[in-house]
Image (spheres, rainbow, N blue to C red):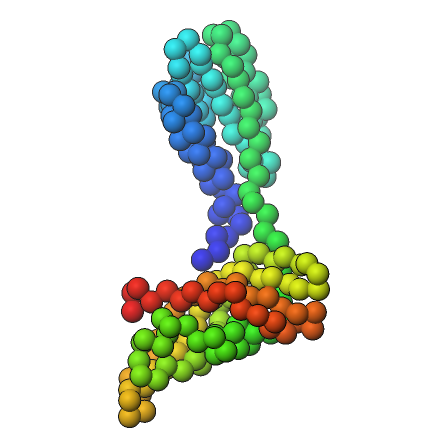
Amino acid sequence: MKIDEQILQRHIEAAAADQLARDLTGKGYAVAQHADFGGLQADLVARKGDEVLVYEFKAPASAKAGWARQMSQLKEQAVRQGARFRLVFVRPPRESRVEIDDIESILEEAIKNDFPDALDQLSAETHVDDVSDVEIESVEIRSGEVAVKGTAMVSLHLNDDDGENLGSDRLPFRFDVVLGPDGKLARTNSIDVETSDW
């Protein structure tokens, strides 16, 4: 499931604070989020011995009117109390858009050419109908080859020894394939189908 960017933007500051809180706790700090600090609200306050760290997190698109003044007041309060103030700008991860022509058919060919044992064990005759929901995680271009890794779903129909239909299913799988300069399948490094819930 892909998270909507507007929803992600609303929660990115809290996610960054949670991540830093975990890291600081692991380093021995006592951490409080949404903490009162000298009568002002701080996103995160970390203490270890005499050391006090005060953090504010800000995503550029979420800055509300007056935030700069509030941040300045918090910084001044931190200085007065001998604490160190840190303003952390948070940016959501940017997604790269990658499309490969006919990737579904390429992956279907990869499965059929090197039929995974996990699928073969599902029935006497397991047939691949199609591949869908392809999510490309990485693409590497080198020496006329394109290495592609990601996840997808494979639709199957299952038959018994007599060819009688036992039903159909959709299963997730991870792939690592290499395409040639013509964009066709050159080789399959791995097809790992998740059948544990089957």
